[in-house]
Every structure is written in C-alpha cells, then in structure tokens.
Length: 161
Image (cartoon, rainbow, N blue to C red; front, side, top):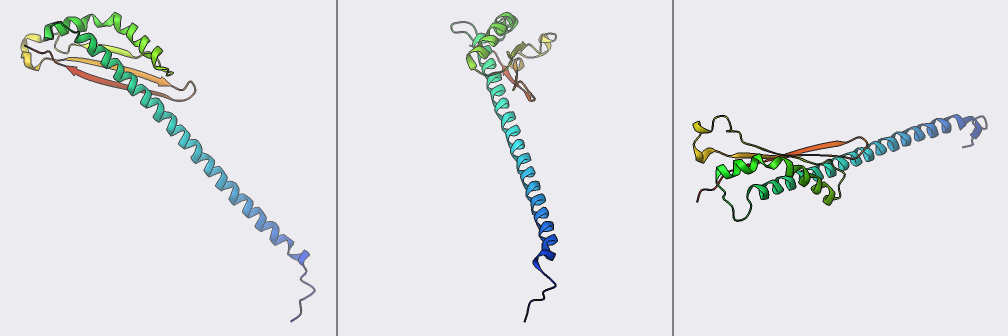
C-alpha cells in the first residue's frame, strides 16, 4: 500500500485545530467549575466559623447572666431571682462588652436579656411552674458579606430550701 499523495498532512490541519479548541474549551469549563467549588467551600467555612463564634459568645453571655442570678451566699428562691433579673440590665451591657473584648473575635457585643414571663399573672401560676427566661443574642460578621446570628435561651427556676 502506498500513501496517497493527495491527502497530505497540510490538508488535515483543520481537524487538529478543531480538536485543540475543543480540548481548551473543556479544560476551561473544568477549571471554572473547580474555582466555583473552591469559592463555595470557602464561603461555607466562613459561615461555619462565624456561627460557632456567635454561638459560643451567646453561651458565654448566658453563663455570665446565670452567675449574676445565682451569686454565692444569697437566696436562690423565685422572688430573689425576679429581683436580680430586674437589675440585670445595666451590668449586662458592661459584661457584654467585656466578653467581646476578651474573646478576640470580630463580633458585636451580645444582647443579654432576662424576662419574667409570669410578671402579669404571677398569682394564677403555681410556684413550682414559675421560671425566668435568660437569653443572649450574638451577631458575628466578617466585615464584607456574611453576618451570622445565634440566640441561646436558658430557663431558670428558683430553688426552695
């Protein structure tokens, strides 16, 4: 068999160009999709870290409020808790600022609140069912796009001796 001299290599160069363009387009699409996946993973990780920071900050706020509500060597009955709950406001702001300053995270000061849900109808609820609700809301952001908010709530009951 002899090679046909009419079909030279120069007449087949158009096919090589088509294959080369196809390979470049396919590789470009793969690179673009891998870049999107990488950015998506980074965004997810950022949200997860901010959410964890906000959750821990909210938990720290609740723990601070509980130490305020249950000081050492003082009564832990429901009436004493109601009084301490009412006085929580001013000191909670200072504690919230201190929590953020000592944590080293880029979060806003958490909002610590104490609510007596039985304030209006205390007489109609038995003492063993009364509680106080302490909640802390923390917001953390990365300064650019993401902002994550977490709120943790604790129900506190008085202790009768």
